[in-house]
Image (cartoon, rainbow, N blue to C red):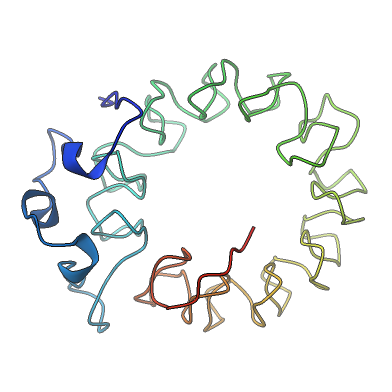
Amino acid sequence: IIHTVPVSPLLTRLSPHPSLSPHPSLSSPVPLLSRLSPHPSLSSPVSRLMPQCGTCLMPQCGTCLMPQCGTCLMPQCGTCLMPQCGTCLMPQCGTCLMPQCGTCLMPQCGTCLMPQCGTCLMPQCGTCLMPQCGTCLMPQCGTCLMPQCGTCLMPQCGTCLMPQCGTCLMPQCGTCLMPQCGTCLMPQCGTCLMPQCGTCLMPQCGTCLMPQCGTCLMPQCGAEQSTTWW
């Protein structure tokens, strides 16, 4: 079941998935980030992955990582992003983002981002998901993100983001985002986003996005900096 949410202020209209209890933060007028409860499995004083959300996207959690959503994208939760599921992880969407599905995970799009599809997952469709780029990231397009390809999905980059490659998909970075690598895919970061690492892949954050960590990977969470990361 997917809640259709109009494009207007969101936090006053959040409604939980029927299979889940409403998050306590959604019923109080107190600013959200000051009311987040820590996840029981985490030692951090605050468990917050998305700025508007009150819980994380890890298997132990029970709510979505999207502010408008009311269900988790993990298999233990009511609606997941796996092939067995039938609903999307995006609030406006109504179908899955997996190969078996036929519609996009982006609200404005009308086709899938999977190999069977031929258009992009971005609102404009037909071209790359990066604004400066001119080609698609799918197999049918001239330059893809798959191991067989030799160019990156980022405009400034020149190599693939797959395990076989040896350079990063971010312009400022110099190594891969795969488990074998040891540096981050974000320009300001200095360590990996893999479970073995201990720091965040976002510039303002200071901890990892893995289950062991307890702070957010989004710029609004966990720090005072205001620089953008994209």
